[in-house]
Image (cartoon, rainbow, N blue to C red; front, side, top):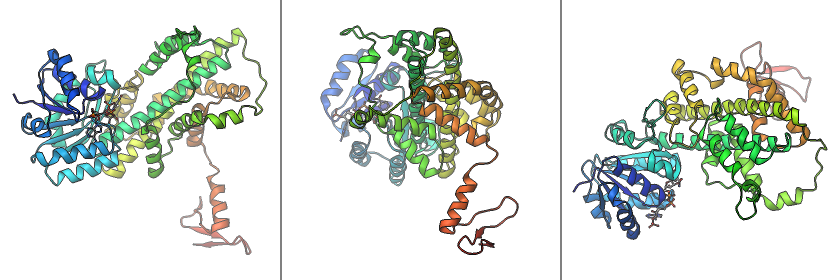
Length: 477
Ligand code: NDP
């Protein structure tokens, strides 16, 4: 038998992806460095479809129809290079290697370039949705050549998640590293969403005085409105869960130190390189990092804080409505920043990414799936050259309606000493963008003072310098 697709790397993700292909009627060759995993897969799930179990790289490659489609689902980093080194010599021009791991897009660009010399299509592909998504339909973000997408697209469309309108959650994002870049920003936005939800929870608890169970109900209500999303849904599930051993709310028995695997950090690092202000995503990454500094937090516990009483019962409900407004407005800002980074990456690397199509494929399968993404797509469809999501009229109006509550929530947070870096960074970004004048003019003056770095004037073209150490007259630079 010849297989239409092969999957190597059969840990949770690879195994489920292989099963997804098989369940959709494809014959799937399977391979893993440790062959026991391969046999376990076929033993356990062989009845779901057609699998070809292979033990050696040669057998695996020989099992594939040509041009070959070979999916790598191994640990990202050096293992990916090791697997490519193993398989590439066995392949022929026109064959495709699909890397579905969480690779850094710069690695993907390098691998694509190297394999292109051999005539092999390297398709760096972002896959979101975790274990469950890999099995039942992930959101898929393939990069690589257009030609490879012609062959792969129909298969990926079949195994992908479907949005509410039945559209498959996959599109050819752009050449070489574009898919992994977009997956990276997806994860950065995911960090920001989670941080904002965390802040909303903390405010409802510490300012409004609600219990985790009550807050779960509030999130359930929010999930029926414009915040309708997977992350809000699971937040309610986690908050209503009670620890069996102690009878306490689950959220109170978990160590409050958040971990990370790196894609959020990459999003911020790359944004710094591209000069894109992703302050909300950065605050989310820093908030996780701060939470993990146990000794530092312990040493700081005695520091003074405000003595403000929590709200009374009648004010609490109003406050909860305000938090919903603040959360929604801050969410618009996070996505504004994330899409700015994608636009900047697309510009820098000549990817020509369609931002509307990206928001469309995030509507299903992935962690940030949300009703909200339909509206982002509508905004970009109406105006593909939209300078920023905030320039979309609908979003601008929604923020205008939310801003008083957003500000009130931050006042309350500040007064009560509840840290809200995500909400605050989002509001600062919003206020800075809409400001008539920024103190950047003063910064330029200081730079010219100490370093003769020159400045531009509002009333004339050219670069100028003031003789700060002399008579303070102005010269053209
Ligand atoms: P892991 O990241 O834990 O990787 C384990 C797999 O990699 C095993 O099949 C292992 O083989 C193989 N492997 C490791 N090193 C080598 C090597 N040097 N040579 C050959 N094979 C090697 O598995 P996951 O399923 O969690 O993830 C797979 C990929 O998918 C990763 O890149 C991950 O970042 C990405 N991803 C994961 C998601 C998730 O929710 N887990 C979501 C989206 C993407 P062996 O059995 O022989 O040890």
